[in-house]
Length: 306
Image 1 (cartoon, helix red, strand yellow):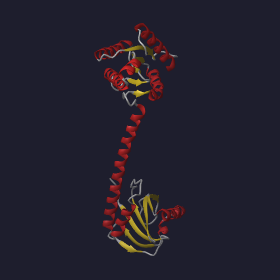
Image 2 (cartoon, helix red, strand yellow):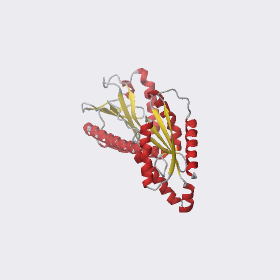
Image 3 (cartoon, helix red, strand yellow):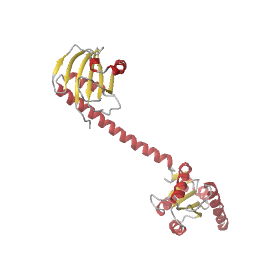
Image 4 (cartoon, helix red, strand yellow):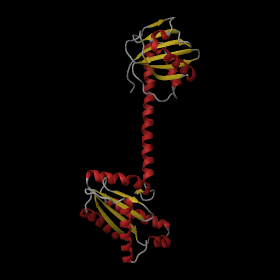
């Protein structure tokens, strides 16, 4: 909502010579003075700039000024509107928080159409309130769209797991947090067995369903809002079990194994437990290389391909 009363509405010519004033006590009077008379000398240059900008643009909202006679309250926020050879100045006690002027013609019409000050105030505040509500709605919609875009930028479009790009962005932060808070991370690297053969014999659509089903198993097995799961390659997945000791990590991998076995999905995996409560000099690339070698050895022992 728009708060704060309208202090005055002044009708001037293009040089700010006053024609008529509607003041906050609802009185109306004419004057042959110039509006600049009511502006302190040190601010007259600022008002001249205001006048030039207003003449060029046709409208200015929330121009913050001080005045020395009309009202003792300050600052005053001026809304200026050019109407032909006339200039309408509306003084409000509070900024109206308007960031766009697409409906300024309607605002102008509200002022011009109602010479009675009480109606001017009502029309002005109602119109500003509508504009403010519209801006609030637009802001919410923009925030929602930004959230959608952020979600799309960090997620793998097929599996809805985090993507490799997000892994590269977030993993260093997570490791630094673990070092600072002194807790371990268990890294679990997994790879589907003979996935290339599955794609070649049953087609890519079937292969995609296979990947999606395995991703669902991972997501249903890890801890919500704690652990992180990434698709970092075609059929390669990395799970970061945060603040997770080896025993707890084994429970989670057992859940994944049982669910995958029930779904007839064969995969190989390897783990690396890193205790960041102690001094660790392992880079993430060294950690991944170590797990990858361990997993390859398991695949060779099983006699399966990547």
